[in-house]
Each structure stands twice: as structure tokens, then as C-alpha cells.
Amino acid sequence: MNPLPTKTESLNQLRASISGLLGLCFVLTGCSTQEFQQQHPAKLPRAISVSIPSGAKPEETIRFNDYTITRYLIEAQNPVLEIKKAGFRVFTLQQSSISIGGYGFADEARFPVGTNLTGNGLPNLVVSTYSGGANCCTDVHVFELGEQFRHVARFDARHAEGVEFAYLDKNGIPTVSMADWHYINVIAPMIASPAPTIIFRFRDGRYQLAPDLMKHPAPPGAELMRFAREIHELFEQARKKPAEADQSLTRWNPDYPVPQLWAKMLDLIYTGNETEALTLFDEAWPETYPGKQKALKRFKVLVAGSPFNPRKR
Image (cartoon, rainbow, N blue to C red):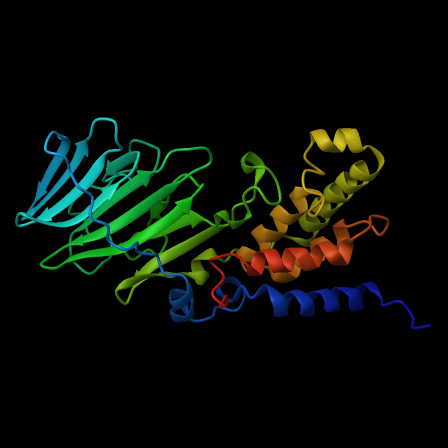
């Protein structure tokens, strides 16, 4: 009979396994942003021409140089955004809610039309839309209003509350942050779902992932062990007191028991601390609780399936 592996050997096996399959090179190994961009750029939808009835009422009109940006109210339909350049329509979009200049739910989260957001000296326009419906869906668009009109990016924030523009690069050019919504309603119900932050910067004519801005120092060992003990206790609760565990979401998805574990692991992984994520997993999961290896395998597949995973083919 082969001897059981020591805890160190077990941890090393876990690390080798998860490193090979997670594929999160944008946070773990700093793969080229070009590779990421090829797989998941800030996506642009195919242009769709939206007809505007003759009776539509312009609710808001903004003029900038030879551009006219108008939001129309249409009876019994969703509002329509129309962008014209020198009198010619260059873009239309229809959604249940449209905010010209806005990019979040807060009223102050706005950029005046013409603000340069990319550092290339050309004026930009930000438009956020909301599709309506349960748990859905926010998009933030960035346009270029220069000699040539350009739809620079569409940030598909999905279930998240928009995106955030911030000056994290300290170069006067705002970065864009949003949540990776891939895990919502999988590990836990939406209100408690983990949603790791991803950050983009504008470079070489497009928005690219900025793994260096996503990294954070690893938590001290004592803090990590304290968190592991807390999660360990939640596992024991799920095993011994299932009724109480159901109320605390500990067993919301049997495939991912104790959502707090997976949420913390995702936070560590997305901030460049994979080793600490694996240590937490190994320390927090009780030996008496079944399914450890199967759960880890499912987790690896889940993370590798994120649309923000640059190695996804």
C-alpha cells in the first residue's frame, strides 16, 4: 500500500493541478494583453439600424462639434440613442434605459461629452444602458467623436452595477474597472455571489486588461489561517446542523459548499495570490467532509470557463 502524502506533498499536488487548469494567465502569470484581447476584447456589437418613428420626441439632445447626440422617447417602446455626424446617422441603439455621459447608478458618475478618456487627445462620449428585467443587464459604451467616428468599446457589465472609471495608472488616463459576473448565481445566489474585479487600461488603440493593477499583496499568514478556521467551522456546521447551514447559504449549491471559501479563493486568485488561495483551500476543508478533490476539480473548470479567461479557445 502506498503511503499517504504529507500535507506539504498534498498542497504541492493541488498547486500543480490548479495552476495547469485554471488558465488565469492574466492574473497569475501576466500573459500578454494581446492574447487576452484576441479572446475577449471590450466587445462591440454588430451595428443595428433602429428606425425612429416620425412622432418620436427628443428627450435629450447634446451637440458637440459636428456631432449631435439625441435620446428619443418612443411611445410604447424603449428609448433610442441616435448619434449623427454632420447630419448623417452613424450609430443607433435601443434599450430600456439610456444615460448619455453616465457610467454608473450614481448621478455624479458622469463624463461631459467630449472628455478625453483614452489619452490620445480625441474627444470621447460615454453611454450606459440598462436592458431591464431581473438580474440584468448593464452595458457601458465608449465612443470617439473625432474626424472619424469610432465605437471604441462596449463593456458588458452584465449583472454588475456598471463600471468604474478611476485614475489607477497615475498618468492622467482613467482605467476601467468592472466585475467578472461569471460566478453569479453559481456559487451563491446573486445577492451573495462573488464577482472579482477586473481592470482595463487604454493602450495601443484599445482597452486591454491590466494585470499589474489587479495585483495586491498577499494577506499575512495569521490572517489567512484565521479565515481558514472560520470556514472550517462553517463546514462543520453544514455537516452537523444542516437546517442552520441552509439559512446561512452554506449548502445553497451542494457542488460548492460554503460559498465563503470559493469567494475568498477567487479574490486571492484574481489579485495574484494563487499560492495563498490553495493554502486556504487545503487548510479550511475538513478531512471529515467528503468531496474535496471533486469540488476543487469543479472549481478549476468553473474558473477556466470565465469569458475573461484569456486562454479560453
